[in-house]
Image (cartoon, rainbow, N blue to C red; front, side, top):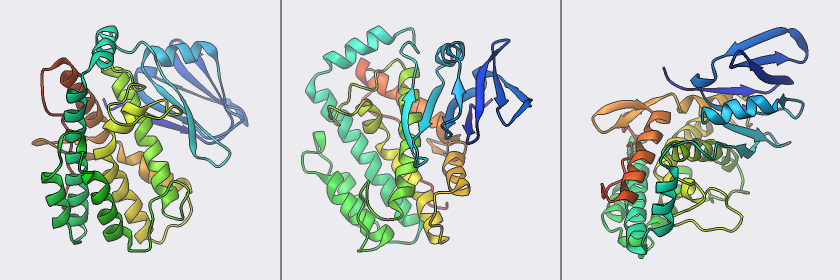
Amino acid sequence: MPKQTLVFESPVQLSVQNSMLKITYKDDPDNVTLRAIEDIAIILIDNHSASLTTPLIGKLAEQNVAVIFCNERHMPSSMLMNLDANTLQEKYFRLQLDAPLPLKKQMWKNVVEAKIKNQALHLKSLGKKHDRLLKYATGVLSGDSSNREGLAAQYYWRELFGKEFIRDRFGEHPNDFLNYGYTLLRAATARALMASGLLPSLGIFHRNYYDAFPLADDIMEPYRPFIDQIAYKLHAAKKKKLDKEVKASFLELFYTNIPFGEQMVQLGTCLTYTTASVAKFFMGETKNIAYPRVACGS
């Protein structure tokens, strides 16, 4: 059964009853719902009057459930995660810490190639020019020393949203849509990394003193075009406000089947396949990180 994402936008009391998640709506105390914790992947809390009990936090950690909290602007801002989600964690942590620079550079080459290819496929699916991106993808060097990722990004955003668009976290619309989608993707990637025994705080490329999950930022890169697809469709539909309908569109993406190898797999499950291959890369069992691809017919 696919894991679920639960979103709470009203005042609720979240607790444990018979090892299940008990949901009590504060505005209607008689309205109580029970959900199996093992069926949950992510809980997103977007109401400052919502509360969780300490026993529940422990149960959620046991099942590797990521709990995301939103700020007053209704944007995801912090997250609770399990620190003991895999029995081989200590082994993988040591491999991450001891990983030689050439290995990290090869991993980053994998990531950049996959990202640019998916950007190209996204543009192709929209009938836009994309051949230059395919050339960039074939020219990625170890560690992306020739900055093909940066060149591809300039071309990609110009073709996708027009010459006037600048991708900036604090930029104008539709940057707000992209920010929301990327934050959800980051949380889901961090959760998948923990489930694979990897420490999200040890990145292979991204390094920032204030960044708690640089490895998630690294590994999620080829998944960004899937978020871009949603943002583009919403922008084309003249959606301007980050309302419930828009947020739901991004959340639904994680349960959408996308091409992974010869199969169609839910994006949330694809993340677990990807992070498992990252663990194998650190162990020297593979030289390729497994990623899904954007469907040109989407």
